[in-house]
Length: 121
Image 1 (tube, rainbow, N blue to C red):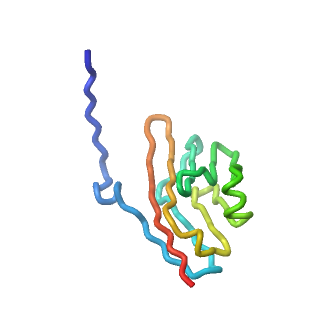
Image 2: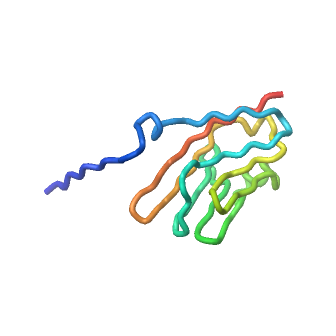
C-alpha cells in the first residue's frame, strides 16, 4: 500500500523558497548571513559551509566550529546571533567565499536557506 501526501506552502513564493541570497564583502570586513525567518525557542539551526557543520543552535545551547577543518579554516572568526539565528563571519578572507547553507529544523518541518558569499580584495 502507498500513502500519498500533498504539501502546500502558503505565503512563500517558489522563487523565494529556492532563492540563493548573494553577499559580497571586501577582505577583512565582516558579513552577516541572516536567515530571514522568525526563530522559535524549539528550533534547531545548523549552518554548513561546503557540507561541513560550522555552527549549531539547539535551544539555548550553541556550538561553533567543533570540526577540525572548521577550526583550521575559520579560527574564532564565526559568531552566532541567538535571537535571529544569523551567522557573522568576521575578518573575512578570500577562502571564505563559497556556499553557506542553513537548516532550520522545527517539530513538523525543516527550512533550508542558501547563501553565496564572495570575498573580494
